[in-house]
Length: 117
Image 1 (tube, rainbow, N blue to C red):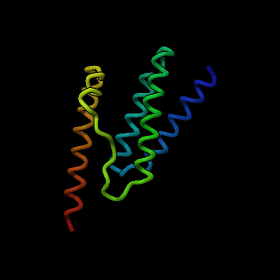
Image 2: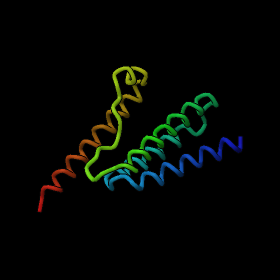
Image 3: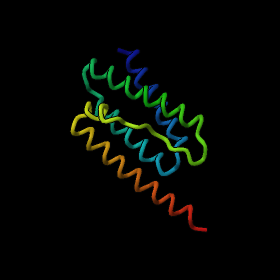
């Protein structure tokens, strides 16, 4: 069990550190989301924990790759196919939609801010 806790902590800390490379307006949002998700899944069963850790590890690897190759205006994220979305629960779809709305709002604010001299 100690190895599992170490793995969870390492991933959690790595995600928070990785988020420092995000644009400022996304750092707080991403960090808050990671903290909430890890807190909400603190007492889940082992099988669920493995899935949770696997998915967050995939996110870490994807984001690390994108940030390492990122140019100034390159987008961060990935396309979610309809087939992928079919596997999400209603709660997850709701969270995803809220995240989409928030990031879209932030992106439009950034674009407006960059057009002003």
